Image (cartoon, rainbow, N blue to C red; front, side, top):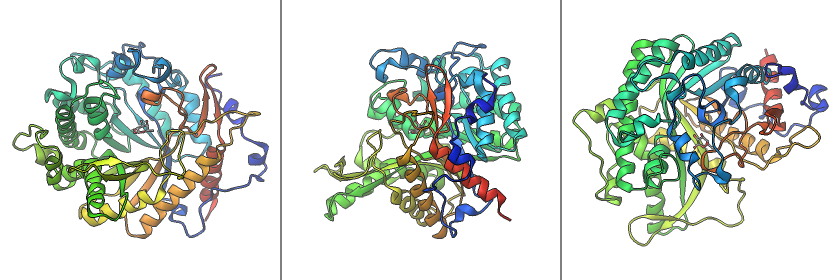
Length: 471
Ligand code: FCB
């Protein structure tokens, strides 16, 4: 049954099939989303969906270790089975294709494809070869992220991202992948959200490997960015036809009042979240105020590193979820002041589409060399339930519609945005929150692995079908 896509599509509502579905989603006629070359797709990540953690020679990752430690992940969940995508990938590709999604952003599990001595693991590599070739056969644009947080544990045992050598090991990994997979990848992203790897992994310990030290966070960040910069020319040499970039999470910080102190706090929030990554990539320097704010946390930077890090990009991937309202902390930093009475998601994150538009237009003003942008993640978690075979995820439909409208506004304001990948194709292992938080447009019943297309996915599919039919 795993490969029978019709099993999935039985769950589409009669209203969808006979065209009478009420449609609170389709963008207005003047929206840039109607342009056929605006890529609309969905995203996932290896550890969050694959499962099969001990199969075909896959080595342990830091997330296997971290999630096996009681207290780290809600309900003791791990990615050992997840969505069992490693075994069900064919049906999942059928599902993507049947929804008409034009792009798929996936990540490769480094410990699945490379042994500890740096040699390829053929069985693991074959999985991605089959998957990517099938996606290409289906006409789906492939966007591959090399590192979405599942560092091989053997590298963590030698210091992980605190060890400069990990950056060179990453370049070797990028070399192997781009030699093996060239021709099946439309866009390579080196890293997903280095800020989260550094701050959540090494700064506050909420994510693997679970270390908590400010100085560690900045050093890890520098090594992650260095890894990215070392990998870009390697990818270019091995796979010249593809696009090369990186995926950054960005955050909107708004001031709690008009006071100069709160305005400064909001500025510093955005320096810490956005400029910290975009300045080195696009200006070749870390932002000045960063280390004024946290003196003594400067990473060790060697001659030439900043030049390596600022290698030209073909695209910038942007992940956006929410805004943070901040006030001055009375010293020179900021503190969160959660707003009352605003719309929030299952994560408690505020729904704030204007933040996406404002950040994008702001980046265009700040960075004269801003590359073309893909929104590589945007979406929300809700406590979705299957009722009579359907999932009516009303808040998500409205969330996606409003964020796509924000993207349209940014495009109209002159930002070069080429596509949007919703997070996520399916419910999955949401890191420290385990399986409780559901971000998918497809529902997963983890006891049976049944996939049920949510109403949001039906409406995206309906829009894409209409767009395709237009002359
Ligand atoms: C991002 C991650 C992604 C997912 C979403 C909700 O930070 O890149 O894997 O967990 O958040």
